[in-house]
Length: 325
Image (cartoon, rainbow, N blue to C red; front, side):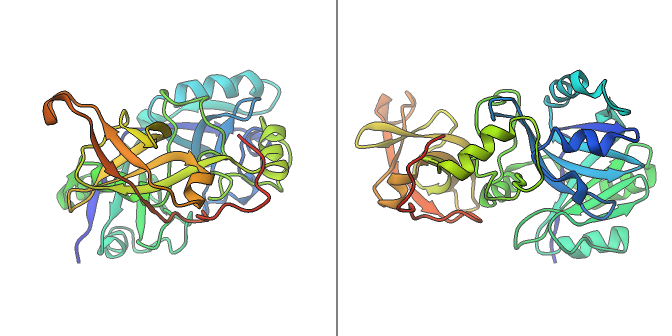
């Protein structure tokens, strides 16, 4: 059975240590830090006071510290913000990216590959198996995907991974993220979106029972007092080249914003885009438009979007949806 090992060293990692580390982070992050153990990780986000996402993250407990795993380029920015407030706690932050390497395992034989490497397999979403010098954990999704986070001094394991064969082609990994509705925040889009727009409130990145955190009042108000006019949707499109600059239109007007895109094995594209909930509920025709000068002698190329399901997201607009984001 086949599996693929992918180089995921496009990350940053912050270690938070000290006796107040968990208490401090509980007041900063959207996730419930109390649910994090050496055998369980959680996903969450850090928002600004206006409820916009500065960074998404996965919180992992290992080596006596709490680690915040985020996208490359977000570590320094997030650490700088945390350091403004951590001075009042018995804790400190360290940028630990250079101390670790990160890999993804996916495919029909992923479970067997992980078991052969570590002797145990994380069975549930977020479940962690501690390994020498790191962890392996399972991602969301019916098809098993795993991430390995391991110290750079684990030469024997790193050599074994290279012997298996590591690819740096992220297309299939990013396609799997799209099919799960996963959007990772990078420096280009930080402070741009609310958790509601990216469905973080539907996919478990927001714990509405945990109490206060930075931006909590705004995030909670959107959740309880008004539902989103726009949300993140997954779509497929054929016979047209797609980029983040491509336009999604309805009756000639721009109707959506593409957040991520990847090509499938068949040559079509799947994408995540922020779209009006009302248009999705009405099942109107949405088109993807490209204005590439090298296609069709400069003429616009258009193709209809097919809206596809996402975990936790209904395609119907509730009758009482009157709020916005």
